[in-house]
Length: 112
Image (cartoon, rainbow, N blue to C red; front, side, top):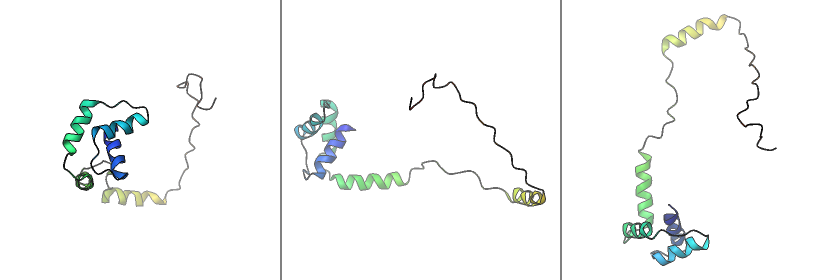
């Protein structure tokens, strides 16, 4: 991922076809050692391809991937009718019990 990020930064900077030396220079400038085998693999996969086209194609593919967050199921009609029947009853507010402090932090707080 770091190799790809460096490659993309070089592309944003105007270098449309970064070499391994260019990517290594970016990574070394922030103290990261480049992995030659991964860098070679990345550059061979991207050789001759337009990065902007690849990003747009990838975005289109990701749009079709379900990402959860579908929410709960809709209530049935019977549940709605039952809810309406009980709405005449007086509402009783339940007081939430205060939670006791747990010892999960072993006596250390975040801001101690």
